[in-house]
Image (cartoon, rainbow, N blue to C red; front, top):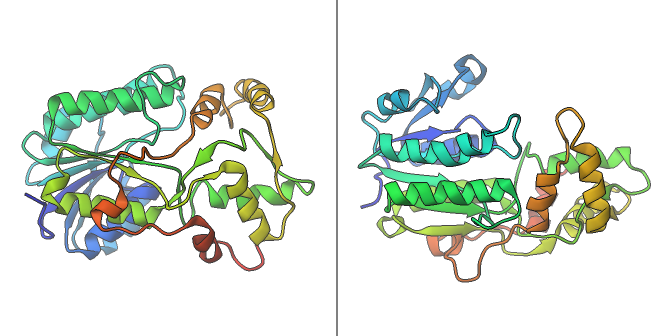
Length: 301
């Protein structure tokens, strides 16, 4: 059975970009929310929502998770990282945490946010770890729902907003690595609505959904659309070989703004399988990127 709108939902990663959009959506539907963070003092602005609790704790502590799921009817896991700060981070975050959620949340509705392109045989360690996390979750909780979003964008994101801020620094055209890689950008509010719909629908239990926007375009075309609205020069499209050389160079920089594993992830593309159910199957009609950009980019960006 679906999760009723007055139920309490535990959201792991609820203070992040996607998490805040999901919190707004679920709270607006009447759900009671419990969010876990190590630094609740940084997120006290969320407490203006009357049906929201902020819990201080570590989501990787299974004992704590068992306490956090008390009186909870559903758990949503949004926790993820794009690159490792230390060896083993992908395993700890993408593989072990879903398993901990399954053990602690036994008997509850579980929903895991994975990634489009996740595959156990992927060249990318990021995508392999996402696939292994899905497998471990399915083994322990066959009725869990898994969603695999493409590139997620929206106000204050790390996609449209990041490129918009980088464009002025490249007056002769911003270099875009692996510019021909296919993506299907999806708006963060559509992702949030899709998660809410999946929780509410009994039929979504045990299903895997691809959360993609309605159009597949190359990364270069997406950045070109951003540049056009900003009145900037069209981007320079880097070949896979040049992109790999750049990744190898930057991989040695502190913070690695573009790593070899990110090159492998980007090379794999970020689109949804044609055979997989998607947002429309949940009653959500995702908005096209080009239409959404007009609302995201100020007229004189």
